[in-house]
Length: 363
Ligand code: GDD
Ligand code: MN
Image 1: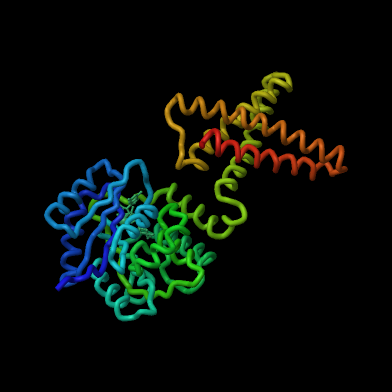
Image 2: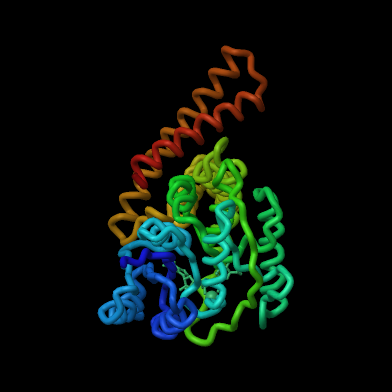
């Protein structure tokens, strides 16, 4: 008699080599008697996590590895793992043993028994769950992030920031194209992507202390969370990238003014000071856009940076001409007020700079 695969457990990993064998042993115990597979999705960890997982895969075909090169990201790793299984249910669990794997068979039971259920979430915030030995700082940050998530979440999921859940694979596959794949918040992303809300149940668990390796949750991840929230709320109207590009542009105006003022204080003529200010602002904007707005297509190395900087300056200079030209046109021939004409010029310049930078500088 053939036995059907019941559940795939997706494990995103980055530098978790020391945790791999323990986790697989724990899965083997927790899911005894069930038909399961484990899918490690590793982003080419320098510590050799992928190879450690492949080693286990050679003696146990239930252990599979997706080894991604040149890419990083918890959410995108989870999405790729979830789409890579034939099992009807897929769970996501951290690779560092902080999640309670003994919940997995219970999650599976709930989904198998109740056809009306789409997702089962491991929650730290229902009765019987907890955040374990977190310091006050982390508790406060987590509470703040959870509170923010309420802005995009319909329904009263207690722990939308949980990275531990099981979902019917059909839903994961159906929603995958809608996911922003930015940052850590894969569950929140799934729960807010669906037009018809996913029906969920929650099971309590206590977040364990990490004993091997270290957390990858840093400031960049926190920023990515804010970006993902923005994307869900306003992304349809003003794309994230354009918002970041424009925000950085506004900062650039400050840099321009600062350098202009300093140069004039130092005795430079206005024209020279103005040129220095513009160059400083463009360089500042180029660096910030390279680090943030286009971080997924970041230019690296002297040659790339130099080429990118030159094209960016050219694009922005033409943008400035367009800006001034349009503003003058609106002001002189359409009787626009000075402020309104200037704003229209700025908007046209911003869209121009953004569109051409996306294509020619970071294309
Ligand atoms: N493939 C891949 N790529 N895996 C990653 C990456 C990445 O860029 N970054 C982190 N991981 C893996 C880690 O190796 C680990 O297995 C898991 O994702 C969780 O990462 P941690 O760095 O340990 O995160 P954490 O413990 O601080 O945060 C956890 O708890 C949060 C709740 O407060 C995660 O589960 C979060 O999703 C969760 O929101
Ligand atoms: Mn962790």
